[in-house]
Length: 240
Image 1 (spheres, helix red, strand yellow):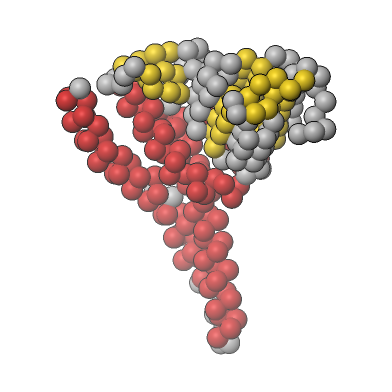
Image 2 (spheres, helix red, strand yellow; image 1 turned 45 degrees about the vertical axis):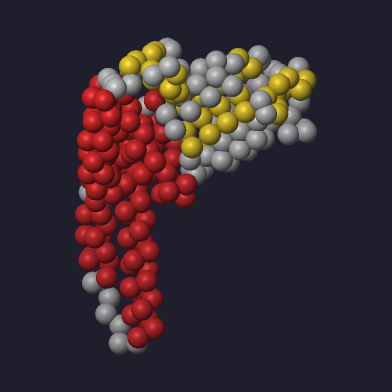
């Protein structure tokens, strides 16, 4: 345990360096763009010149944001743990280190990602990070905390501020358990889904609901509450 604490301390310092990399590299194209955009025009009028500079700066922020998402997703694509079923690993393991780095990259990116949700940009980001996302699916949250452990089939809806976590720590071990939302299922606003949860076809999870680990929501049923429980067996969503 003492060795792990030392490793954790060293890892924390390395994580800070990773954040410098994650936030710093995307600045390069943004700075180059700003130099180009700000040099396009030269106005004699102070207000026109200030407006030009303001628009150059704001559009540079967009360039930075898109560069950050692309760079962050690329790093996660390389580093994320490849897991298809429930897997338990020691906390002091190489897989844990890889997962921790990806987790920090996710947290470093979320303040920017929130501004692109929902859109094809955020969906492309999640896919590159390792998430399996079907067609005609609407993802309104920036809190898919373990993208590589999440599968979302066609026609699903995830409400704003919903949180999906594909991992937990139990008895000194790190547990990875994929989450699967089947075709046509709906996850309400602010709902929380724990590892190993399966939401079957056309099932509905109400707003602010909490789905405990390893729970299966049967097809067509409606669940809500804290923790979530069966409300009705039909797929009628009018009251949610």
